[in-house]
Length: 163
Length: 374
Image 1 (cartoon, chains in turn blue, green):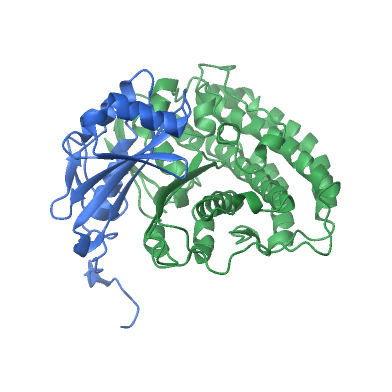
Image 2 (spheres, rainbow over the protein chains, first blue to last red):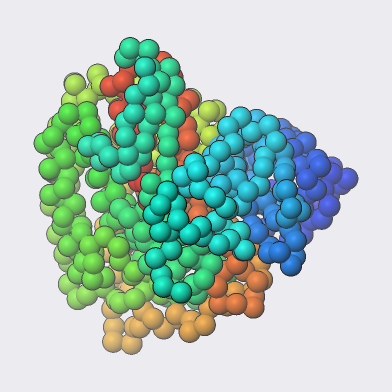
């Protein structure tokens, strides 16, 4: 389906399940609340006319302390129908938690681990939520806007640039 | 028994640590540990203007830098809205160097895989043939592996005089060598016995795990972003998309993946021939051609979220940009590395196999740790 058809289809059948829908640059974006994100994404995957069987990418964004929010963005793509959708969930910056979609798309397993590692977003029902890129005993969440590198890591000076 | 195939090991896949829990030689569980090559690309990208990120983008998949740059440049150009104005010659040159790099990357995949299995000769043959590609690309861009050549809006330099003829000569030299490579490695009885029916990846699992690229095609799905998304000038080129057929074993085993990569090399050769033919006929160089003509001085896309993807030799390389229209730097630039996603299927593939088969499976995933860790 083209983006316009997709947008109208979603509006028709999933009207109450998401907050906002917009078309920009030929792509369709929806905003979902974190309460029913799992249910909606599961419906998006299993619906016979949408069938988003592939989660291309799961991104997390930190909007900074002033905006007070973080976002998780899912890039969905349907291989048989060749349409794509971007679903955005806005989370509060203190204790950001969201349901894991690992049971829907297994690929989310590592993507969510990376979102946890870099931003500190917790995913409920994730089978194995631990750091993936940083060492296991690293402190802090590197891609947050207010992140300060720790002084030393296991007695090695981390930031070698002179202030 | 807990065995550690540590981050430093001779199977040249880079720094990957595999924690293997095994019962004798049969593997119960594999836990990959990554992050040894994490170079904080995404953090750097938040502080750099779009055009200055290109050398960093090179280093994501350092064996196929042109493809990374191509994907990135396509994404930013689409965001800026200048993608329709890129001159045809620039597009053809981009595809030419990207396909040369695809051949080089598949050469390493096949050669090092042979070496993991124990076949040392094909590795040297492959390196010898790859040297010619690296010299061609050094002639065009200045460096052998990390080119900084495809810029947003054009290219850094035009290809040198005589490049097209050298490409043609290289293709002529390469074709018999590809047949030799196939005979010595792909159709080799020992290689077949080591790799057929090993690490079978069913299609449904592959899609669920987000696998893309030659691994997905080896499981039977004819899905190639160059055909599906039809970006750049690929719609004008004539090439096939090889898929695994389960010739030597089950569909989706390690042999199929290597075979698909081998067939893709043939297809890339055909694409290069077509590009060179166009570049020497109606898109000939002339004195007025400036590859940097459309390179914008200030790159400030409108505020948007944008995900662009392209077919890297390893799979689907995706860039997610969020821009706010007020800065020259992206607010967020996330890289969806194909090897990162392809590696996540390893624990599922390696249950119940022998240790030697694990090495065969890891080799067929064609990992480049630069993409896994970024």
